[in-house]
Image (tube, rainbow, N blue to C red; front, side, top):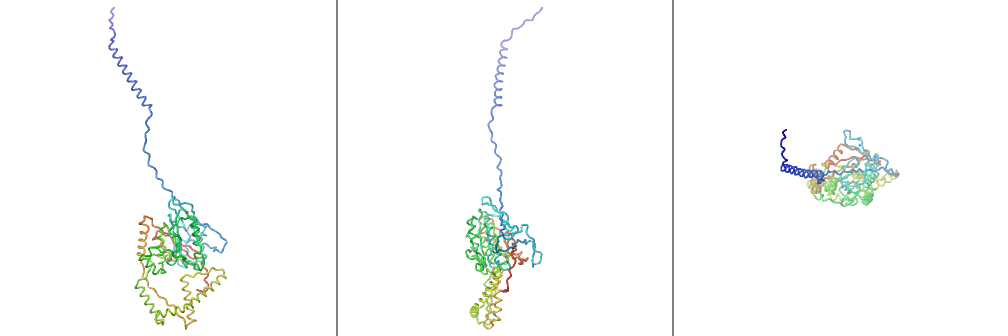
Length: 460
């Protein structure tokens, strides 16, 4: 049998193969170990850019002034002063009845007896919103301007008792202001201004207490009527417009325009003006040189027609006769005061118009009783030149630019609280005038109906 010859194994080839195998195993171990290391090696931390911070608007806290009803057992009037809306006046001027506001208000004894809620707070919570008689005003600086002239205490408005209510409730309003705000109070009367403080001050407890003491004597009786200390003369009174208005400040609304000039120079955020009327911005007037000369010429002619030799002759005789007129007026007022006191009626406060009417009545009586010696009262009829509404608006626009715009301050709003007696008439023209006035200053207004008229007796 044939058996093929077997060749011996090739040792060199096997050595090469073994070497290659060993190299592969080594490479596999190296790279496998690296891969395993990379898998289990902790990763380096990465830092992503954080998202932009969310801007959170500061929460504005709203404060409302609450005037709580205080039922005091005293001689105070029991009636309530009511806020009357004046938005709808399509009705006769006589006895206008207008619907109450949703939050009917008065002064202190206001409906449910409150102005709203007032919490604590300060400048760190942003501007404060104060609500007074349904009028909201925002800011950190508040000015309260109060009319103290005689007209606000006439019998037709309820006399001194009504004004005392106004004072007490204004004091309570100030007491409930947050301590963080600034405030000041101005009294005005026929072109005279009295400031409680030279500038606005914090509503601290000490300042509130001092204010109450300062206000208490104002218009507290017949001998304490009006501005006591004429201590404030605004810079704007030195302007041409200011000088023109001052020349006839008792005419129409001139005294109100002068007061507003002073209010703006206090640079508040909001103003609450308390009065019994506001003129439209078309009611200003002044006297030119021509007006004055014409008025004086007519006056001299009237004196001549009355039989006097000259103006000096008339004034000498009238001055000599005046004490008789003055004494008769004083006697009538004293008699009236005694009668009212006996009936428990508050003393009468005569307005300028009522004083003039009483003097005319007395003169008519004396003219008949003392025909031989009577010297008539001859008045000078002043001529005036009107200040246009555009001119008045232009003046206040320039003043606000000076006081506010150039100092990067927001212009103030001027709000008005108008006091009327329960039976006093509120006409459409009254409404238009007030609306015109506050609209220019982006403000609002309310008309408060006060107490019923006091019987004036038989002296008018």
